[in-house]
Image (cartoon, rainbow, N blue to C red; front, side):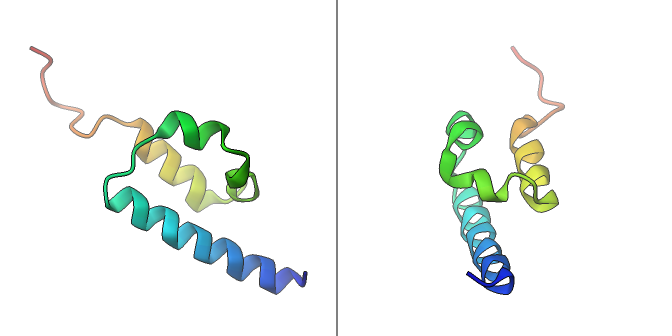
Length: 64
């Protein structure tokens, strides 16, 4: 595989992963251990997505 092809595949993978998250996918535990996501782990956009998912949806909500 040519490096440019790998880059475009990673871009497509990130696009679909962001789409899944936008649609409500939130299985962070699986995303942390899923071997299929290994090629994306070093990408800053993947790391930011994981950090965003790790944050509470409403960090200022009061737990009552």
